[in-house]
Length: 217
Image (cartoon, rainbow, N blue to C red):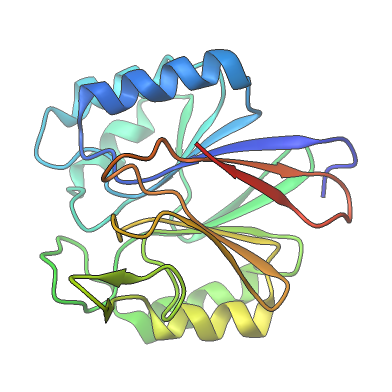
């Protein structure tokens, strides 16, 4: 974990809207984060290539996972953009901060292009996650910042078990537009940074062994 302060601009659920990317660019110019994280639903049904090229022009590395509205083709587009990185089932360390990602959603009553086989996915991620990791996933964990369609809990039970067992420093998620905010599961900070309604994401600050801090934007 980084000894000096490291800031993450966390977002999700852009859905290809140009105005949301404008907000991100404006905030990055002011906040100057070390990295931008997009926790899924990047593009939706709009022009994926042009949108991701705009992300590639942002002034910090962009770490992504796919959400339920992201077509598989965006992985190929991301590969051609050196400043945009897919974290799906891999880890990456930036300035001493280790990021781990898992794309997809769980079987909830929403349409999905990449609804993951949850047990297999969780099992494949266990060896990558430790207490210093920043985990990036599209859905929230079950019971935390996951209430959509009224009071329906639409989070992942497997992801919750994984967080309780591995206790990553931070879990960055989205998917549930109605519940942007932050909470703790034991010592793990959970941030739903959805831009699906009126929010602009979250700024997360990490510093050594201190507890992470978060400001919703």
